[in-house]
Image 1 (cartoon, rainbow, N blue to C red):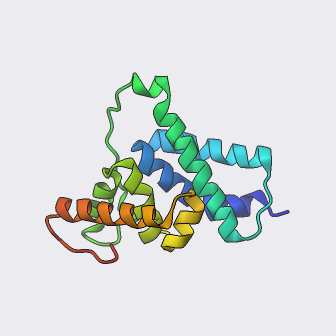
Image 2 (image 1 turned 90 degrees about the vertical axis):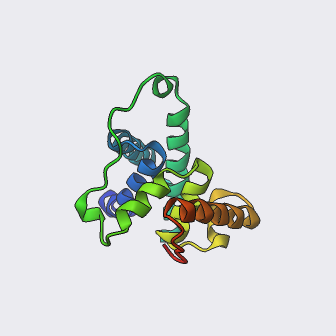
Length: 160
């Protein structure tokens, strides 16, 4: 059995970024991240590989974030703070603008765009992890790219 700290260090940024993509709120993303690792500690699943572990964290985070979005408490509150990307998260001039646009995509496009461009999963891997058809992944990527292209003023990013 692996050391919890190693698993945590390997997956915390992934879990946090996916949570932030869905919730657009740093505090809620931190709460979801904590909940995911508590769930991991409670279940202590065994993984076939690092990729299997990563897939488990992606799916668990996605599901928890979606549950959070559906909660009555969330629907009755107003977020006063907009998402901010810290300077150390930005490596190019356009990165902040692109990340903001990705965060504002409809929910069904956000995760596939993130997994494809930032986590470099193939369409087949995304399909398998999210349990959706490859053609659906391709359609969501295409539509998400089209929206991003319009939002970014017609700039064409082949690999964001």
